[in-house]
Length: 101
Image (cartoon, rainbow, N blue to C red):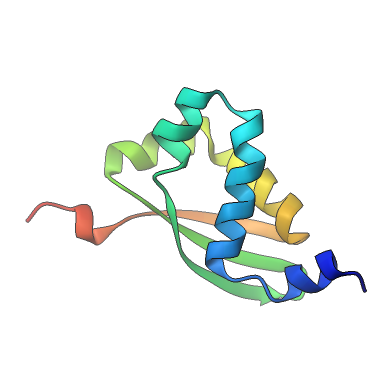
């Protein structure tokens, strides 16, 4: 097992998001990346089985979530799968800290 494979086995949410953003920064337009993808944050990663994970991704608002889902969901999912070397189920969640009361 090489260091890259070992790193994937022990990946935390921050490492996964930073590596995913690295992939997306070179494949998306600068405006799309910085305006829509970069503000997201991984809420949690749950292992479904040995080959599959569930990633909950915080978005800043319902509008932000809808736009990310419509325009960037597939790109984010594919980049996460490339980085993690696992199938990814991606769930977008509006961060409750950003919901006005």
